Length: 214
Image 1: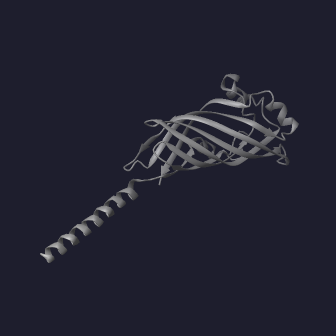
Image 2: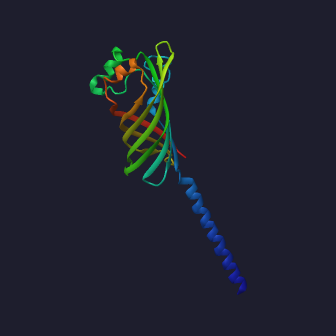
Image 3: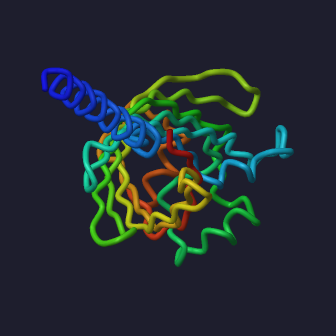
């Protein structure tokens, strides 16, 4: 009887540990809380070299899922502007690029590290907000630095998360967003004259983000 009780106790103990291990392995395998992503638009700059309209855009996001609905992240971005960002589509944005009528007398480089918050609304539908403090460097047409400044850049996004692959670790997020910049300091006069002609926001920018969960 004692041997039977000892055997039974040992069996149930081993079985309990085995079940715990199984649950733990499943959790580790499928619970990918982190993700990295970038906007596909940055691929369009490859091969453009020193072209006047090359924005030299680089942008990466690292995010963590707090739960099924809430995602927070860190954003790094840098780009080079050749004309004001506030020219809207209906202002003839593409025509102005072709005619070069609103081009700066040089470029402005904007670089920053910021934060983001993403809220899942329904299935893959989401809304997000990003806040990006930026350090600005103004370069004239002779590639000489003429000034530094600061900009507080924010953007607001609505999109859809589409995961694919065997374990759903790869994803794309088609979306629309608009951005504004309430604080924009120390702009050289030649640049400011052009900026003041246009808005301090841009509406309805389409984008596609590509990412991986880990």
